[in-house]
Amino acid sequence: MTHNVVYALLLTLLAGLATGIGSLIAFFTHKTNTRFLSLSLGFSAGVMIYISFMEMLFSARLEIGEILGNGKTGDIIAVAAFFGGIALAAIIDKLIPASENPHELHSVEELSGGNGTQSHIHTSSLKHAGFVTALAIGIHNFPEGIAAFMTAYEDTGLGIAIAIAIAIHNIPEGVAVAVPIYYATGNKKKACLYSMLSGLAEPIGALIAFAILMPFITPMLISCTMAIVAGIMIYISFDELLPAAHQYGQSHIAIAGLVAGMLVMATSLILLA
Image 1 (tube, helix red, strand yellow):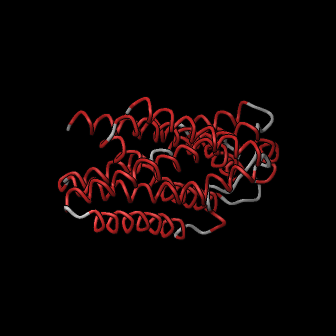
Image 2 (image 1 turned 90 degrees about the vertical axis):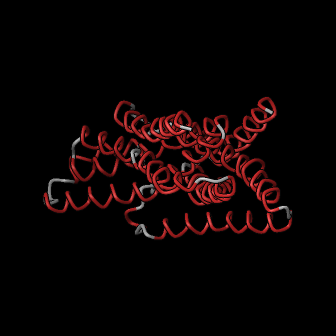
Image 3 (image 1 turned 45 degrees about the vertical axis):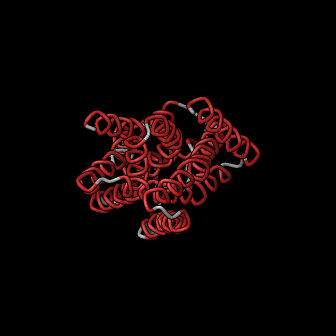
């Protein structure tokens, strides 16, 4: 059990810190690679959608049914947990004002205007902007941390797949975070640091999940949690990843990434079976 916990926390930490890769791309390239960003967002969504429907929700229904000795009741509980996960993710998303949403897309080209736009902004407002942005990022990434941790704790193979999917989609998120912070501060190092730190919301989510859920862990709780996590990932995929991929203007590439993510995940599950 201890080994599983440490492994799950490590995977979640690495996935979260991938936002730093996005900030580095923002500051060491001169042009936004929209094809790469659309492909990566679509791929992440494909992995999450396929795992959620074909593995996590399906397994939760079977396992809860076996525990209760009633397949129909198991289906009802699993489906209720699934939609509860969607509702939870939606509520968290609604807590963020639209103007501060860290998934608002930005491009590398915008950095050229950073220094010129911040001279009239007072220090106090910069601090406020930084705090609100950090809070927004943390709330958005928190459920991803829970999803990565609980999946890795229960199933190593699925945990790796989810961690990779989260890490890949955190790269363009890192760009989206670094650009507005640089606009507010005119400081590349600070923008890069904040971008990396924003990813720490995911291992924090994992730690909270560990602290709250682990003392009460049972096969029933694990199965219900898997259904909830599936719902969270479906919401993230349809509300954040796919719309973001399309906003980069590469719709067909995003769909290709989506299909590729599903295909890779389907192949992995067959090989691991």
